[in-house]
Image (spheres, rainbow, N blue to C red):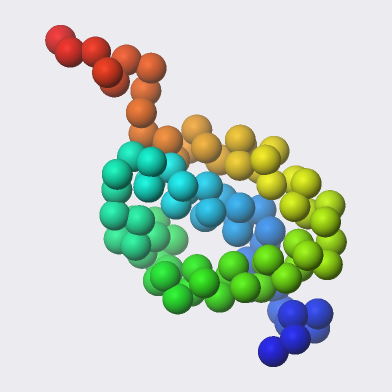
Length: 90
């Protein structure tokens, strides 16, 4: 399928949100596939399809890739579970 004329499956911002959530879950040692299903009602195949779509779009428009870090910082606090004092024992 050609991406050029394909309908956007999710917004770019939503794509980055899902990507960032998965990174946070993996860092926290969570089951990423289970969380993907629970939070976004998606499977790994769904995620793969989104990745194929958006990676081609970013290759065609590098300015999108430049927005990634800013968007990731926006969503990282939402999906990061560790708090400042999580390493303290009481």
